[in-house]
Length: 272
Image (cartoon, rainbow, N blue to C red; front, side, top):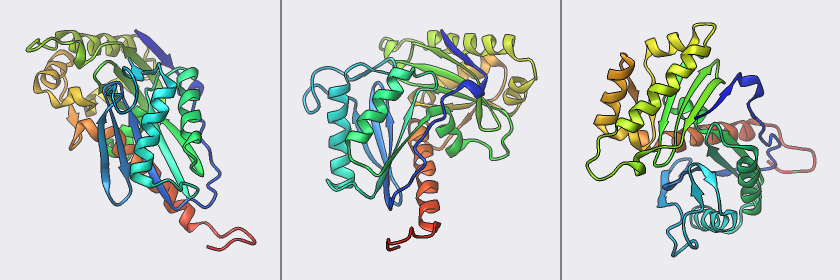
C-alpha cells in the first residue's frame, strides 16, 4: 500500500499560460477504460484502454501506471482526432491521473499531451477532479475513495488540497466471476485506518461524518458500496454516475479554464 501525506508536497503543477485556447478536451486515462469529455457535449468517448487492435498490443496503462507510452500516445491521438479534429492550436487538454502517480507517470502524461499539439495542457489528480464534480463546495474535509479496475485510492482532501492519500493495487478486475468484493472492501478499510493513525487534527473524522465520496466503476456495485459503509460504520455518497465522476470533474476544471480565458483581455496586437 502506497501513501502520501501533507498536500504541500503534492505535485500541483500545471501550465498556466492559456494562449488563445477556445476549445478543450478532458480525459480520464484508466487501466481499463479511457473516457473523454467536451464542454457542451459531455462524455464523448468511453473506450477500452488499448484494445490490442486499434491502438497497439496489450494495455498501455496497468495498475494506474503508463507502461507503454507509445501505444498510449496513439490511443490519445485517435481520441483527440475524433473529438477535436486535427487542428488543435486553440485547445486545452486536461488529463487526470491517480493521486499517487509517480513523477515518471506524470512526465509521460504531459509529454503525450504536448505531442497532441494543444495550446496548453493540465494534469490533475483524480481525487480533486472527483471533488470538483461531486464534492461539497465548502472546502471542508472530504474523503474520496476511487475504486477502479486495477487500482483503489483513498484520498483525504482539506481545503481542496491533498492532506493524505493511500493506494492499493487491487480493483474490480481482480475479482473472479460472482466473487464477493471482500478484498476491495478490506483494502479500503486498511487505507482509511492507516490514515486514522496518522490524523492529528481530526480532519478524517470530519470527512467520515459527512460521508466518503465513492467514485470509479467499483462504486456502481451495491455489494462494494454497502460493504464499505458497513465496515466504516458511516453512510457513503455517490455521484450521479460514479464511473464518469473523474472525467466530469476534469471537464468542470477545463470549463473554468476556458471561461477565464474568454474573460481575459486580448493581448496587444492580437484579436479577441
